[in-house]
Every structure is written in C-alpha cells, then in structure tokens.
Image (cartoon, rainbow, N blue to C red; front, side):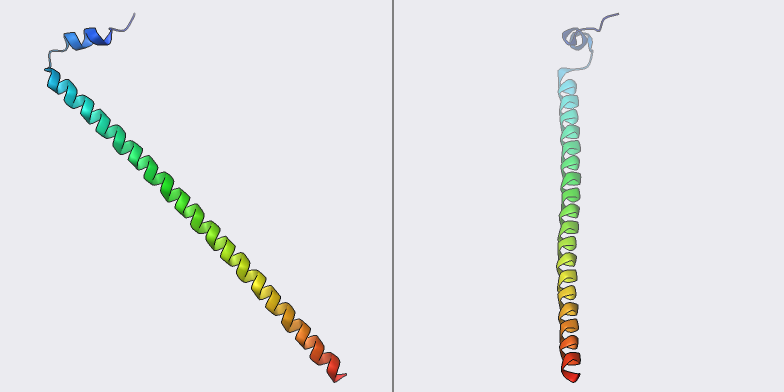
Length: 85
C-alpha cells in the first residue's frame, strides 16, 4: 500500500491553511529549541573538559614544583651533612 502524496493529504485536510502553517511554525520552533539545547549541552561538556584539562595542567605544574623543592631540600641537607663530617 503506497502513501498518499503530500499534495493529496493537504487537499483532503479539512483544516484551514493557516492551521497547517501554524503547525509548521510549531515544528520549526521545536526543532530550533532542540538544536539550541544540543548546542548548550555540547558547550557545557566542552567547558567541563577544558576546566578539567586546566586543573590537570595546574596540578602537574604544582607536583613538579613540589618535586623540585623536595630535591633542593635534599641537596641542601646533603651539603650540610657533608660539611659536618
């Protein structure tokens, strides 16, 4: 069984044309809202990822700095210990 062509469905539809236009505008508005929601979601996920990367980078820098500080402390302790003996 084939589908009724669009022009035949419109011609058989007893509703006025303005109702059909209203339905079309409602569908367009719904599609726009859905697209806007998808864009907001994508931007939120990207923001989250960028924040996480920024935090990871900052933590890495902090860990390296602490490691260098601990190494310098060890070197100074070794130098003090070498001078004593």
